[in-house]
Image (cartoon, rainbow, N blue to C red):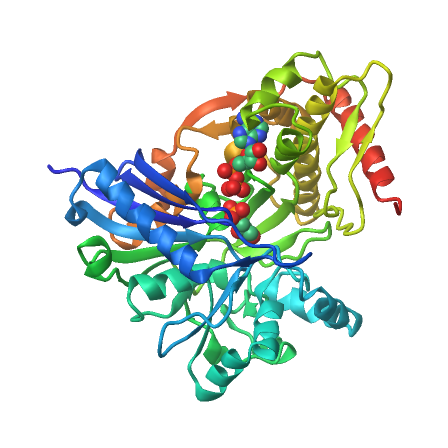
Length: 501
Ligand SMILES: Nc1ncnc2c1ncn2[C@@H]1O[C@H](COP(=O)(O)OP(=O)(O)O)[C@@H](O)[C@H]1O
Ligand SMILES: O=P(O)(O)OC[C@H](O)CO
């Protein structure tokens, strides 16, 4: 029988990728184009919506050409994307009304602080599972209506579309036929009630917004429409959409409560499947929706993020010129037996979960006359694992408190997960196996699998769990006492980084 394929479109903060998989989940071909955000002033981070769509389309066209296949053999398309980033466009013309406000943009911080001071945090948490923070889309939506007259005019005329990047891509791919999103993306706006799965009137009122500005919300595996034949030569169905971190959790086959993944990219994003009961964290994490095929029985994940993960490696590479390529850090770090007592806390823009210390600043402590660049590189690499461990231990504390399953293994992906020294140290600190899968493009794989589920290529997630394969398993080799000693040293350094500078 002729081979058939699934196409995943993965629109990220710094690049657009398209990945072609066969129906067994094997990666056949991939194409990637850089699409960097602009930083027009301190704290502002914007994307050109046209550039997001153009690069995404080009990579899709390129990957099909590279694989030398007929588009008729692509059974379905799945979309996954940077989350929270908000695009505003005119539904009549399809034209963006302003730059996309990126998840890292902090322009709505003062608004968020005001809302917290006015005592709204508890309501927001109870309904959206999130904290009031500039990271999420709601404040961005209000900012656009308050500051972009064309957006306000469109809103008044009933033509305003406010959507996350998935809905912007879907709109373009279907030439304006479909204005929709999936529930994982909706769950990152701070306007979506994740207990009842609908846009929440109280949350919309809080930000002076209307549900009519926002797309229809569907399950992540759903018939979202067809790609216009002008783009890929054939009306391929689009049957999966999910935010990138939830898509990675799905692509890592973490279908059961207690299963977790950590993505080691520029930052790190850890998600643990926490099952069907809505619970708020007592340990600084947020609650979000898992990618799923139904709206009727929500399934949740606990999430935490490390702001500076692989970015500390970039800082050593580009800021300190310590080495040429990110991968070179492993050789440098291995050239010394240990960190020589050095601890690096890369709190370049504060510390995220579970610390939530926006004013913390980076430190290097424990320096002696014998400290070399190699010790600093080793400590910098270790900082990625220390921060991730603090997050994952917080997830375990939440799980213990509510009699849920704790973490028994960690599945990993993202650029820095290729670093064996880092992965071994991660296993040592956590005291559980750290597993790197055969396909590390798990974000794209998750979107392809979601699309495949709705398209009937797969009948159940059990089938997908069978397809998921291990590449390398890192088993812990440190005693628990030694690991606890190292974590205590790290926490001491974190406290120093939190002292006002
Ligand atoms: N071998 C490696 N060791 C440590 N860090 C690495 C390695 N390879 C890549 N990185 C880091 O991983 C990040 C890139 O990973 P990627 O998953 O592409 O990130 P993103 O999706 O956030 O752009 C960069 O910060 C880079 O410094
Ligand atoms: O673009 P990425 O891969 O860094 O992911 C961004 C996250 O979705 C932000 O929440």
